[in-house]
Length: 168
Image (tube, rainbow, N blue to C red; front, side):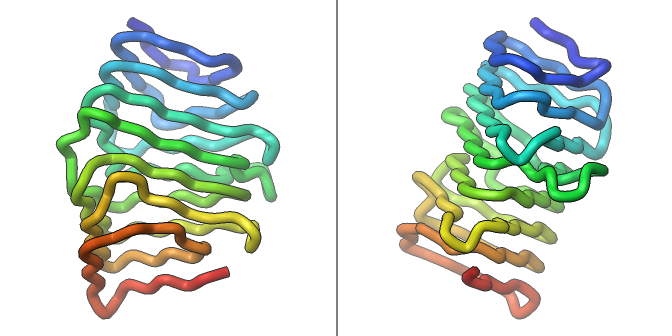
């Protein structure tokens, strides 16, 4: 088990349990975080990359709660993560509230078959790149904005009147 208190990721890690106490994680290199359980203490989680060349991969075996999470530039202008891949193979969480992801290139999310995003924002800053949902044929957007080129295969897409999808 690893417990993160002064949160700097500089290398790939693989643990059964990762517990995050500090609400701020800085990525100081391209990293892949592999864990069976990703446990958060606190109400908001902030993840930022120190350089636009850095990629972030989260591979979590069980539930990954991304509600109240910001994965974006938090202090260094123009320093969003390059590519982000988020996988949670055993995820049973289908409702995600207040998730913000802003990145330079590609975003891939694989969190299960039915996802409901509420009060969330996704911004992909490179017009030649894409935002992809894997294994999510049903998507519900409530008060959610997506600004990206999207690559989705969906059976069902539901959006309320306060949501939008804007291609780059």
